[in-house]
Length: 219
Image (cartoon, rainbow, N blue to C red; front, side, top):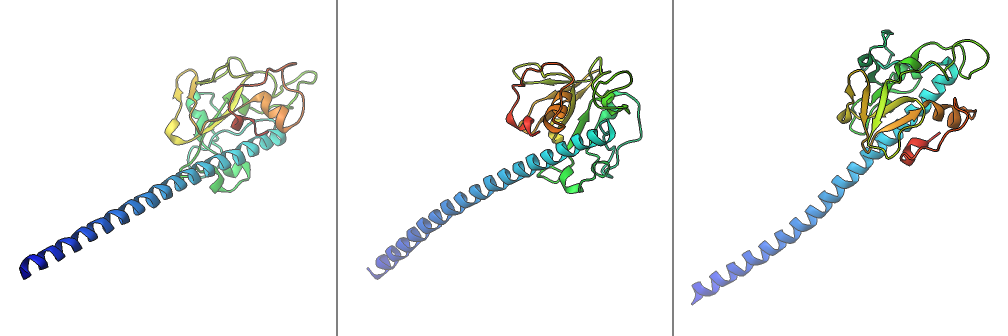
């Protein structure tokens, strides 16, 4: 009789312990899931914020130099000296030193370098940004264009000047650089640089408002 009572007491304690461990497991799982979700959201936000900083720096570079910078071939942050118009030379890392920004802004939320894709013909030295009289201008001389965007409802307006993205969405490179839209893709046309950053007339007389995500309209 004593043995039965003792066994029953032990069984009750084990049952209570199992229930307690289950509750702890559920609570732990909830907080772990919430922490993972929060960290993922923070990394995405860091990526978006850094892309915005780089995009503004690129537009400022155009205003100062009358051209866009070439990509950095590695993580040193200096634009490559290779001026060949081969498409493969215009996909690389953000040239943060040439842009005058800190290296941390050239990285995504995972700490990996952002991918910088630029229209090769817009990295040439132009005499001016706007079309005035005769000469070489940022508004002219891009035919045919080297970059195309897929995954948007309407064709991208004007010439795609540059694209910023994460390394998990590398473009397809052939005679034309094809960029597939992802949740981190940020593309800017030449008209967008002139209209939203420099606050002046675009290259074309009229421009239809792009139907791209709001993130593409920071200027």
